[in-house]
Figure 1 (cartoon, helix red, strand yellow):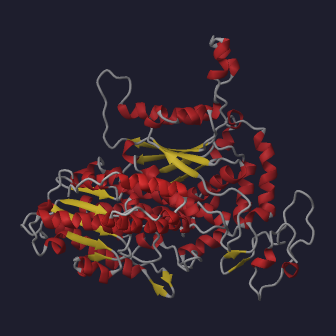
Figure 2 (figure 1 turned 90 degrees about the vertical axis):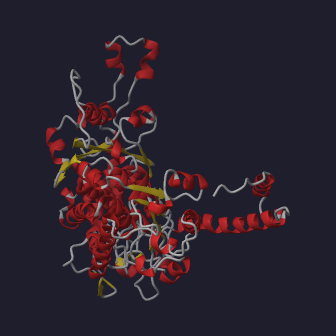
Figure 3 (figure 1 turned 60 degrees about the vertical axis):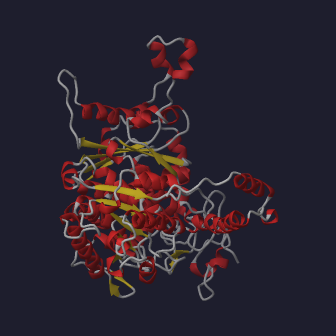
Length: 610
């Protein structure tokens, strides 16, 4: 029989696995309580939970605890100096303060019990040791191996993958040194000073984030002197125009990033840029082999495209696209722009947080704490969104990258075994650097919906400016807002204060700030390559922690497939209609789509500009 409250658990157990009655699952469940194994931890088979986490006592205890939190206001919680001190953690140049979360020390105790119930510690060990934590694709998720030390041993299917990782890194170093030194030149003998990196999704969001983060960091900027790096992702031809603007085929190197070399948008863009190169280099027979390289494992397709397979840099199926910036996907273009030494510092920062994540106790483990608080805000306090607010313009591409890292990972509706979740998981992520965001969407954050916020700030600027006669430097002005906004969200401003200030009665409700809006603050020293790596690893691991607690697969992305397959059908229809002049097959589509396609085709396509 099914375990009461267990949502058909017996149907989800392997045939040779004991039924719930044999494992001690509660026979009856008192009202308001959850069915659970007598053990404090979920039972697992091949890494798959045998109960939804929401059906455990630890989850039920947190649900019951919400009532106490609803009665507490952050303006009161922040009066407790001991609580504020205990709700911080530090790791090599990073200070994490989560005292403005709607949580008490009891909340933390209950979240730690939830982590224990979810087998979080063991799941992290499995993740780091090369176990296949992505069961739907039967793969490991081992991006931490990409930034490992050469003497580490990390095995996948019994093979230590670290030597292969460092072999690729060494190949990238040699190649980037050749390009940057001018030993490798284009077909006209000119050095290749400009790079276009073609890729989409994780093949560009992560690399572009790191590129932008280091553009004005003094050492990186000096290393990039005289060089350009552009990213081409969107299949919209306007993105091609933007990537090519001001570029010279004689000095341009193109990096095509596609694991399978079949990604539709990437390969169309690659063929478009190949034509630009060949035309600009007057059909030189070596135009492609000297001016194009690949990040791919599909060497036959790389060769068919015209790229020398020796100039292809590989990565592995245990590297997910959104976690791939520390693979050849990011290391190749970033090494070409900033030099391999800078990229090594970035990898060292990632590794520093990897080691912290794998060794620090949960109560001082920054990614674990952030992940558990994310679960608390999303699943218990019902906050569907969260904002990433870096007070550093250099991090303008950080939020778009974390959008993919988090939403593609945890935007799931089913558990590992395919059972539909009966709770809210995954958040809508958005963000903008401060202070720009303050003049965009902070109105809603302060007086509209409750949006948990992650503030990121730096003690030192990459580009310090202090004008004579000004009371503070430009960076101090920026950071004044970094410190003020979390308190404004937490404390708010009530009617009594407004009346005391003489605000007109008719405006009291309009100017009231409820406060009690949660946030966390990360304060770092200075945005250099090492701290860019640290920052990224913190948010990567936060996402993984949330997925492990929720019992979902944070490493597949089936949700992106349906739209792509339907686009293939439409593409064939457009090609047929354009070539024959015939109307579309309206019967193959619903009336709305058929009408839209017909209207689109009635507008004659303009002549190609390339």
